[in-house]
Image (cartoon, rainbow, N blue to C red; front, side, top):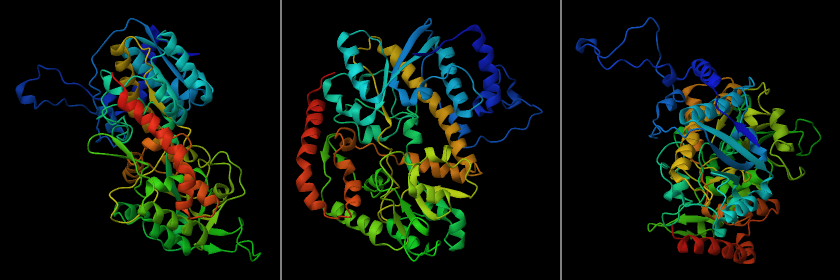
Length: 500
């Protein structure tokens, strides 16, 4: 178990760390209340200040929490061992993300006089461990962060609090994904939420990378402008993809030694297109309920167009040779690293890892829309990310609510901007346009009710059909929908029968 303790020396350390961050809110000078009337409420200094940029302005967002001294109480997290360092960092290491996580926890610990601990275990054992703790009524954990699908499967076991019963949790704040309200809330009840403390929902977000060097060689337009004008669609992607193909190795065959307009590992990145094209498995109704609607005329057309793009479009390379595994361990991504691919879909994590030493300039844009009439760009988060929940055994809701809100708020202010910096500095810039593009992508994350509570069901049908080179969604639906529908019905029944 990792522990973040407060001590007297933390104050000095924290002060030094805050001073070095350069955050606008931390460097502000607060004028005294008794300034002369003619002072115009300003203080003259010899230091010239600049308007804070979009990321620095996050520090100015008030979390609205009351000031409390919890007398050194311990706040415990039960989390996924894969993300241990996202919860607790014992000391500053010199790595900017590690230090931002350390600082986030230090700020919360010092502000509320608490000790933050994390117990991490293998993802498959998390919900069972939490259930045992809840059934024992031991109030051992105040926050649960677990694999989203396993966590969703466990909702009907009755081990989570309804988030709307928690004091001090404000889903209107920017550190909470609005998809929590729009997609995971059923009849004013939500048992899983997506907040910035779950940094895996940030690094596992899907986007589209493009090679600026290849784009320039083929006289493509400014992709950022195209996105902002709402003209980045699947038809546009297909049009540009068709323009880019060269038999680089001269063997007369289309293989992984050639240049392509688009290359993809046909597994998790494929599934994203369902949401990118504006569809959802579960659709929110005006009365607050959710209805499954994942087989309709548009979905049929969607699969036909997706299969056609993947297998019948010149300039497209589909990597069927790579085994199931990490998005960075496949041929399609290796080709992008070798300047053989114009467009490559992947998660943000690769920008902070594998692309840090990539010398060619590249851009980051959303997945394309279905058409220009679609209201926004959407994406999803790779399935291994965490969902946040409050264990039903929590005894002090006031304590828990304040700490959970504070940790998510400080993550929004400190850790997410640091992740942005890592991604953008890897591509050589942190301009406002690039930040706005990342904001657009993150704002478009969809956490679909049918995906979260449907186990490994219909949300994964796109990849299964693409791998089979089949657009026959009708036959696939008829063979597979009943088990999925039963799982969803079980979850919906729990929501409908739940009483606070």
